[in-house]
Length: 415
Ligand SMILES: [Zn+2]
Image (cartoon, rainbow, N blue to C red; front, top):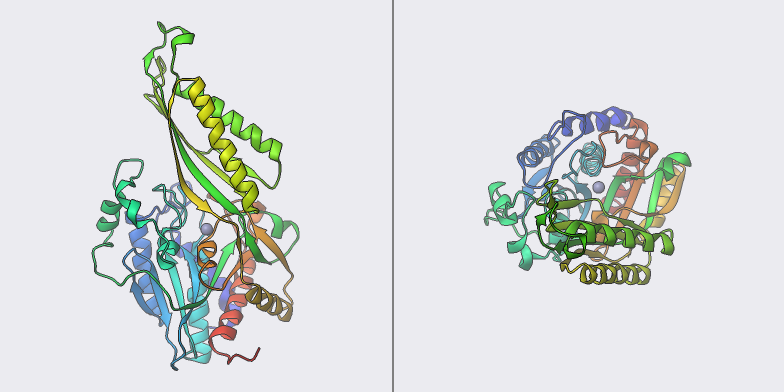
């Protein structure tokens, strides 16, 4: 493979992977442990083999493609991203980081042979939290921080238990090795920005310095179903009315705190969801993010206390579950400087920036020196079938990744 082929190769591979879970509207839906997810992992496994990598799965379904060291250097340099998507997501989110890693390893193998330290690409099984109320399932298993003791309670929206779904996909059955990795020397994730900063500034590369902290909650309000015609307003225990007040109160509080705090209620179910029955149960999601832990913690407490006081006033029974509590995370400063140097050598304009989106890199960064590198997202659109990054930008990211992996995997430490 020639370096000039990278543009076409990466673009072709993105289109190729997007067929697994392709939606009629042009997007991709590849939820954890569904048939499209299984097909994508199997296809990636075959492709990795074709590219000359040694493949293996772990017990939760993370897929590795390995380029083993010809020396006895300890540990591995790991690159990759997640294979799952949101419902009706784009072709690039997650997929790009895996495919770029595969191409980089193939290029390095063909050009330089075996590395002095093993290089691996990982197709992480899950990051988005789109099927189950659980995020970073792939990376948290690698770092040994997955909530394995709570899995029995986890179900998807169709009441399929997590464990059942995992076993039906062929994992969690004792066939593969444990997902825990203690031998990772560095983790590098290449990802689309999912925002418009790079495109607006005409920067092909963003080097992430920090990922914002994030909390996600599920808030359940239970009242009483009753006749919409015969129940006076004052006697009602209307779960939807209570939830509406909670949502308004939380979002207004977020406006008062101001940027960079963001708060989102993106999902809600109403029961019985019948036009002439007072709702007896509502469940809604709350997602809040901020780069400083103190502000995020204080806002999380405020939001939940607003829910409890409104719930009490509306005579609703409340259940609040926090299923994600990710602190803001710093990326490794040495790797950041190294990536900066590579961009300068390749005359690639770059910027150093925070990430407002969560990424596997934030789980990895607590355990291994980690670098997160962004390429532009057209108009900042992501989690949408219109997600797009030009092949020039995709290839620029792959070239940076190749050089970084070359420095970490082939060169003797000189610095
Ligand atoms: Zn992603």
